[in-house]
Length: 133
Figure (tube, rainbow, N blue to C red):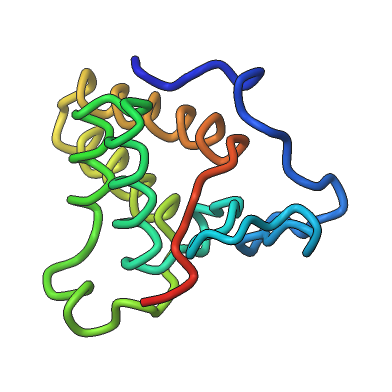
């Protein structure tokens, strides 16, 4: 797995609400075109997910299988039709787990359970998400 240690990533504000992307205090912002925000996989838009995965790939902080699985969780045409409409990625992945269990593919179901666990780690890390489209 390529996810870096949590100790190498700046912590997010403990007072922030967990169900939104969190923006740091104005004094913590840089003059760059993106700001550090916290991602919430239960309320993420396709555009935010793509940006997150791209940034993690560039930083070599995500396993290619995890990146592919996250992007494949988007429904057909979801990015093209509603790139900024939030969806619940966690529920989608839980549905994938249930599908593979029903199909009898226990190993793949368990892999997706592991991916859900890795989402917790990813959410705990700050990522750079562009605030401009």
